[in-house]
Each structure stands twice: as structure tokens, then as C-alpha cells.
Image (tube, rainbow, N blue to C red; front, side, top):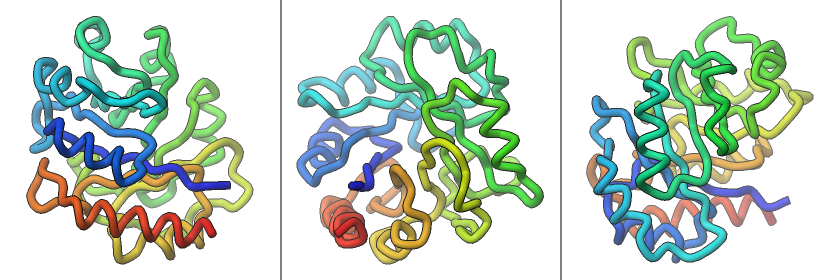
Length: 207
């Protein structure tokens, strides 16, 4: 099965269109103000304007108030929610959108137990753990820590780049991969050549 690709931390419409041109299945918009890749609702609306059909627009939140999430959903296009904080299963549901739950791969994390705890999640997104930082660090974790028999879909994140994504996909065989900093020229600005190279790596691993 073909490995899907999400390019996260999009802040500019031209980067979103380039990601789609290169073959990305989804883009990610960060609604977490401390992030250098955070966007306002107005920015997000400009980014998604004119996107073609069948591209999933993902909204990333970190321990956000329900009212904040509802406001974003009411004012711009979001197809999928991504929760990157300490949200309970109940906090992830009730928005009329599917969601994915990010898991930071700290020592001792029990992925089967977390899969059972979030039965409504469309997938678990596995990211590197850095204390005090909810994601987007550019660090990777040991992919051997992912159980081969883990139920449900897995999205692999954390330190992926054009240089290592082919080996990551071959080893983990995730449903999808999620990249942000690995395809940037600077934080929040995507590099077309890096995006193209990343997509070639994913396609090569899927052949």
C-alpha cells in the first residue's frame, strides 16, 4: 500500500500548493501560538484558498480550549484534527471531524495501551520526545521501539528528512509520514527541492 504524506507547519499558500504539486496527501496548519510555524485563522484561510479536492487540511492543536478549536473550525477549512498535547480521549471528540492523537515517544511509553485509550483516533502519530516541547523539534526516535503488531494506523513523525525517509518507510511501514522542518529552508518556509526529494524517497520505499 502506498505510504501517504503530510507536510506540516505550512504558513504560506505557495508552499501548500507546491506540496500538493509534489504529491502530498495532506497539509498541516499549526494553531499553537508558541510554535514558530503557528498561523492565525486569517493566515490559515489564505493558505487553504484554492486547494484542490482530496487534499486533507489538518489543524494541529496543543491543549487548546474547546472554544478556540470551535472558532477555528467555524472560520476556516479543517478536515482533520491533530492533538499534540495531553488531551484526554474526551477532549479530542465532539467536533464533527476525525482526529489523530500524537504520542511523544518518551521512555516507557506503552503504545498498545494508548491505542486502547484512544479508540476513536483515526491514527496515532508517533513523534520524538523532547522535554517541554510538544513537537516540531527535528529530532527522531528509535523506530525499533514501535511494535510490529500494533493495531490501527500509524503516522511516523520526528526528524524525518529527504535523507532518511526511505529507510524509515522501509523499516516501519507506516500508513503515513509527517514532515515539517526536514523540508524547510527556514522555520515556516518550505523548500520545493527538499519537498520533491522527500516525496521521491517515500515513493522509492513504496515500490
